[in-house]
Image 1 (tube, rainbow, N blue to C red):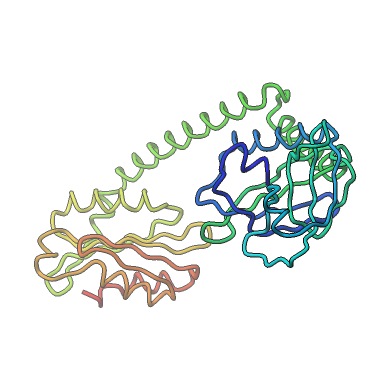
Image 2: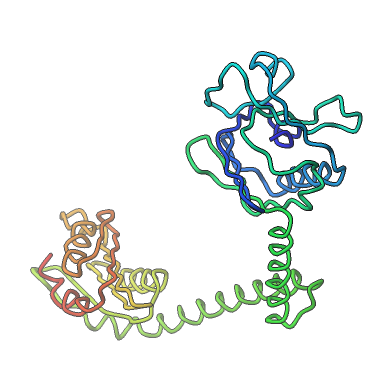
Length: 308
């Protein structure tokens, strides 16, 4: 609590806590997340006090006296006329490093904590953040577990721990490059298929309509197919669907001239989505949808022309 207020935010209020053997959570009022650098500073400040092995003093006194002495209270908590205070004393044993109104304490000196390690910081409610931390043997076990995870990651990347970050960044960069190359290759393959796709166009009530299923295609690939068909056909309503990763997805595109005639891609997408127990919608010229149920996609695409 003192580390947070002294180092960063005097406006911060204590908003709740849990203390158990080796573990704590500490809630406090604050509007934004604490960045990693600031969490490290807080952790270092706490551990510095732990290493100094300061005495912890428990006293009972009047509430007014305690507040005048600088005791910090749990935000919103009600206290009686006489309160129990827990103070961490500086070396001269006269000045309080911290002083809280508290119902219990677990140590006689700060050194009894051994080591303090923050493990997470996150939001628990509007304007309230939470820090979770471990101490003593629990902190040692946490650090050993983190080291073990790092060692396993290093072995998986055939790297030393010192070179792990460099190796990981290289693999990520290589992966992104391969994804881009694969995407480019897929686009070329799609371009080669456009002519054969275009031959499947049919007229429905005087409207050019084409529907197809390209299994394994992602949204970008389906959009590429749709855009190229629009460019080739000039006027058309285009439905491109796909089954990928156990999910059904589709895109509906309508060329501008058909939009002016009142054909609406968003309405068509909603109707198709209803047929496959999914969701869909969008703009008059472009819409999309999907479902976790792939079993009805073939039939829905086959019958989609009825929505024209």
